Length: 166
Image 1 (tube, rainbow, N blue to C red):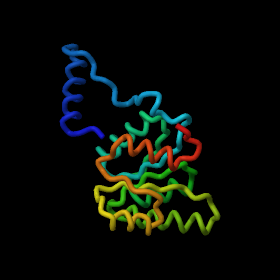
Image 2 (cartoon, rainbow, N blue to C red):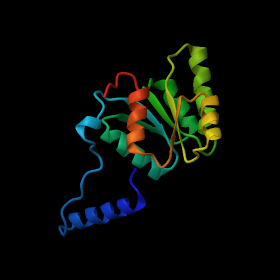
Image 3 (tube, rainbow, N blue to C red):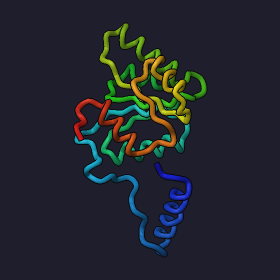
Image 4 (cartoon, helix red, strand yellow):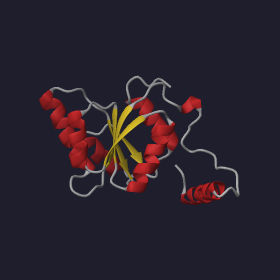
């Protein structure tokens, strides 16, 4: 993940580059080819925090993933109803319907409509064993702690998004 200090440094460098006073900063939107997925992955990123959503989307984009966004549990349910995704990354703490309830409803719909199981990975700042257990109890398949580490995110995409064989 990009840390606060590194983000500030990159923003300052980018602003200076735009003014022509410094070389452009290195891109954080491109991962080395060895880290890119071999095909586009349809990933639904459910995150209500604008900054977290943008950072995660940049990371996923750098891995070659195709990302759709939802900002609430309700919006995630509507997106899943209309589209098939390879993977859902679900923030667990959102106003209204939280990620736990959204995951449970997605699982209920899959069973009721006999749809394929879509992997759901919890995204949360809570990293205790009980938090992981709560994610699994809600029907999620995996659990990533925030701030998101790009290597862990890449491993989760490879593990859960079908057809990604990097």
